[in-house]
Length: 329
Ligand SMILES: [Mg+2]
Image (cartoon, rainbow, N blue to C red; front, side, top):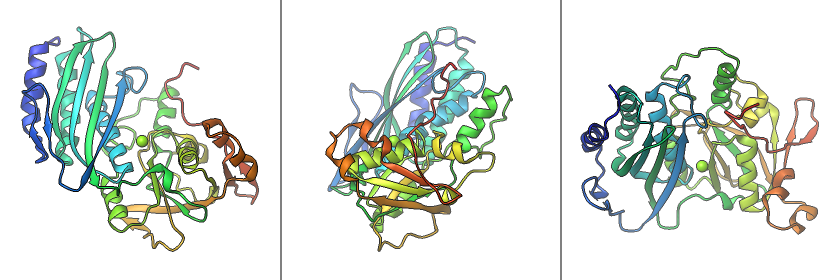
């Protein structure tokens, strides 16, 4: 059966009723949603686009995975600020010849994540589009002034990552090579888990001085921390937790792991595991060299802010390469 907008809006409303958050006073059904964060909390807002053939391919990614990833990406940004998610808003552009089943599976994947984290689907929009386009907006809250920012890293802080890196890029590499990869539930590529619990423990214990989620790749996201904090960084290749099936290059530059990268002051007691997720110390924050700090505050300057100690004990600059997935080679 082909897509009917009426059916789609009907099923979105039914599904939304199954996701509730007490901060949402009015969800779908009025001109605007009405949200009320707890007194003494700041609102966090993030948006993320998922576009067919840019962020996913219909031949590679089941609709359920596309829906899951769509919301998980937004929740990962809320985790990166150490926030608690409240509500999400979904704007969908769908080709008119898309089977209804695809849309149903997409919504099932998205709503399973919404229920898991008590995020209410509180509004959105539906339109026809040439390619599948899903724009998710997530609203969260953090105690006033306590959201963990990218700009708080100080020279002497240690650098940590959660989980293992490179798993998502390793799957993409296999699919680019023509392999059909079965989308298992435990795959961080197909079904990434936002690290909301780890982030909330870090905030409650006051451990992290800065934080970002690993969406573009360690080299790029660490450069964002360096840029916003006006610092440099040194990491050790031997300390990077490499996911099985990945290698150092994928762990350094592969995107979409949705792990957290954070810094902690020298005296902070950072456990080896938080909420059953492994925490690895991978390096340290350094002062920007005289040469770097005199340059203007632009992204380009921070391309040389990171160095990596390789397994032979040699110090090399680490360029923020990132992973330009689905780019035509
Ligand atoms: Mg992010």
